Image (cartoon, rainbow, N blue to C red; front, side, top):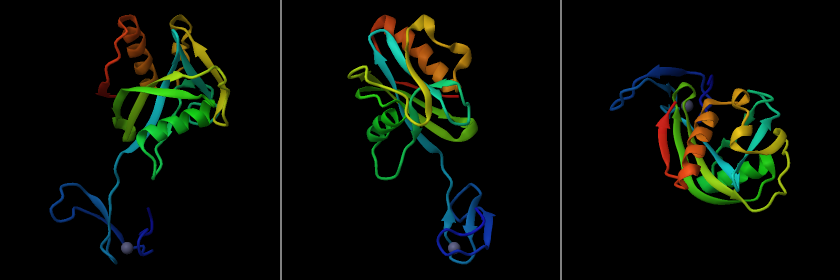
Length: 175
Ligand SMILES: [Zn+2]
């Protein structure tokens, strides 16, 4: 940030505001404190019988690698709406949201992943603009070496263990 988004001043200074304990970018002109906080990624693990739906990324980063439908939550939508929207945009998949499945802090990039388990309503899915291909995978077909992110790997590992027990708790953790 080079200019204050509140008053347009370029007089921005890193400092610890009174009562705070972390360095913040503060506008010396209008005194606005520009907090920077983790961003929320909302998404789904869509399933159909014993298969899971993955999307092959058509965008950077990790072009050509497989992921679950997920993306940045927007202002004005709930976390469930964001997960459903992302799944539609990336896979044109119609889903029934089930339980909250993964809530993981990704420390390196300051992101919080919130993924729901979701059941596909039908098999009319197809690739959205951000996907090269959208496909159902059985456990033994998962392209483990071509997964886009560690969180995807973790989600799938958990899912196939939980699927055996038919018990799907919420997994909370960090990577
Ligand atoms: Zn300002």
